[in-house]
Amino acid sequence: MAVPVGFIGVGNMGNPMAGNVLKNGFPMTVFDKNPKAMENLVQAGARPATSAREVVESSEIVLTCLPASPDVEALYLEPGGLIELARPGTILIDLSSVLPSTPRKLEPRAQARGVHYLESPVSGGVAGARAATLAIMVGGDPQILERARPVLRAIGPNIFSVGPVGAGNTVKAINNMMACVNSLAMMEGVVLGVKAGLDPMIVYEVVKASSGGSKALERIPSALVPRRFEPGFKVQLMNKDLDTFNTIARELHVPVSFSNVAQRYQQAALAAGLAEMDTSAVVQIIEGLAAVQVSQAGQAAAKSAAAGG
Ligand code: NAD
Image 1 (cartoon, rainbow, N blue to C red):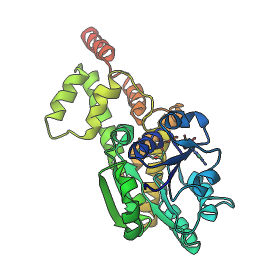
Image 2: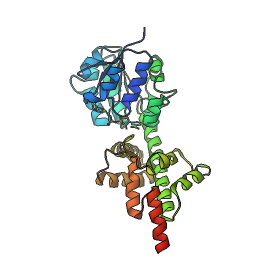
Image 3: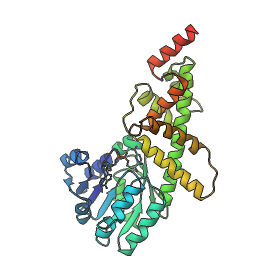
Image 4: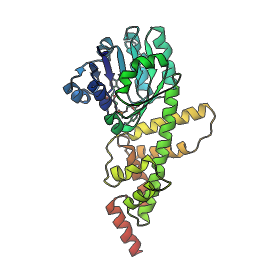
């Protein structure tokens, strides 16, 4: 019989991941401090819990997907937290993107109680979470990963065992820094293109077939042109991941540059009130600096301004 699984934190990412675990036949108990976030999962057959305690008491494997280190450390480490309440032998897996210092704190505390713990940040966005195509970066004991693999396989096929705890969140921060820098380079390029009178979709088609292409380019048709900025992946979470990258760089005395530039744009977006919007919304900051908008209307305006001037 399939092992009972718990899922705590079913927001933009956790919700579709939990849905896929459920679809794979694992009996599931779910908890989110926002009860609305659980509704679709309960309709799909998950048992709703009213506390994290209820989840950990009824599950052999517990997955968590919370915003950031302080949330994760509180849930796992506080008195009455997951590590204190889990039965020995329980496997706790944190899917959140956090500072590497967080898993390094949690693992020994779990081990002291005979509880297993893996860090397991993911990548692929909400679309990848829905399609169960996420990349999963597991830090921790590979033997425990083997026991948890059928559950993780339900959320993505690319499961990497990357080293001891802390390694998973290190590679995750590297990935997100690169994704963010690619995305900002794309945004500056397309804003310049529109200011120069180009159709943003021409920039998209040409660069896609050329050497400047990256996954970030897909945001031109999916977000920038249609002005679709709902998350997705919130600006405040990308800012947190750049903080993680910069913290690791500082600790290791690696002088990095691009992540600082990228974080300056996230800071500007936070100051502009875009914290809860998708990271694509950062284009609005670049558009403000260039006094142009990446949309068909913006392109038309740029053309007429160029004709007038
Ligand atoms: P989110 O804000 O949409 O969801 C977080 C959920 O956790 C919310 O529903 C919130 O109510 C719940 N929550 C917070 N504290 C809780 C607690 N103590 N007990 C129960 N529920 C609690 O965030 P998200 O986009 O789902 O991101 C979650 C994590 O996944 C973050 O670390 C993020 O960096 C990472 N991530 C996100 C994406 C993405 O595209 N959104 C992609 C990869 C990784």
